Length: 596
Image (cartoon, rainbow, N blue to C red):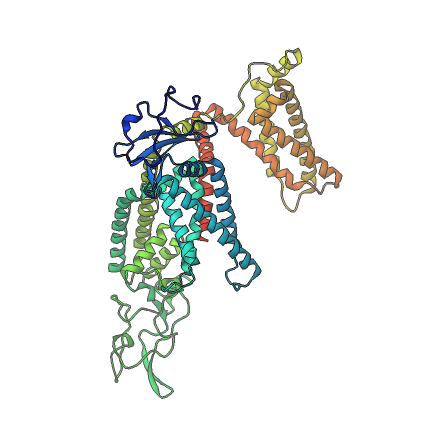
């Protein structure tokens, strides 16, 4: 215990089993050992607050704030409390819980939703889920006993786990007067989120996402204002334009069919909107010939509203007239099913249309619809401004806010250090000045491989190799194919010679440690395997491996990056981003799994 203590050893005074008050002056040096019989039991009080309600303990090399008296009956120096704290703070307990969370996630994926409950798979999943819920309940109870309930619920991850555990316990009650509570099973899918807390980088991503929500309120308000402006412009200028189609007659006709009167207004059947760029005309020779008359909904505010003229009534079906349309071929309808949901007929439909355009999903089709039905230049201006302001400007503002929140969470400088490591990442070979073996052959190979003439020659051969691969075609030119095959063999010989020189110059260990030479060696080995396979199969095998030769082109890019600092900065940023995404991708897949 003396080795584990950060302060000089002091004589500890005995504490009562149920202390009425823990005085801060009893802890002059900040620590009192609760158990010093063996170094294996590393549990000590580091500090007690002034209210004697919270204490900071040190256990297994980490500090934890707990309640001085858990559940109002368990003191911090009690035997039960000490053993419970040793269990819940053990790393093996964390590993076991993470294993149970993984098994629970697999079971949720294996459950057959459409099969009856008596299905063997569903029965096995149900029994295993019950066992796992009991384990999670025991973990929750142990943490509450060890930390105290108030300390336990201060952590958002514990609140999430507590909700999941309570929902599972409610399902065990045989009679619930509140009806079917099967929806509580949905809370189980939230349990895999707890696994994020064990990885600091992924925890930083989650904290950034959650912490950015309050700051994104301002961005959401700005986005709502932008949406409202575009929606009001659309509903003011373009209501009902998606009803406009070409008809064979200029206005509806009231006819008698099966003993009843109805309005008939046949369509030309083009399935194209009209009234703007398209005016129901076709080009015949050098002139435009009308093929129909453009008409829209009865309440269309333009000149496209149908005119109902009859001796019986002048009111249409939508205006309270007594007669309906004869068929759907006469009734004004929208030309596409999706236009029933995204349109400018009211504010909700306009909001949905703007949101779809912001996601850049099918916005060009909507722009073409508006061009045909309203106007060419107005539609182009409206939708281009909409895409630029919402999809590019607004989303980048949101990303800037998230990046600012991440910088706030990254106050310890860990992210900056990672960024510096990414920015200083070498893309190519790192020259070793120390020879792996003191011999004349090694010096000769080192001087040869470091000469600019040799390096430029190898880069030229690599570029020529890629160019010859670009000359392949189907059906193949027999003469050209045979020539390219011999040229490829000559290139392969050059690459093998280069690999041998690099191996002698750097040694096997140095060759493998260098990213560029190791990468090129793998490509050369694959090329040799592909050549042997082609020779063994009579020229018909190994073609799939041939495409891997293109990877040598990255060496040319590396050479350009070493000479152009701007290209080097871009490549280093790309590599740093790719390395950072290794934590984002599991988080994305986890959320995808939860929503699935």
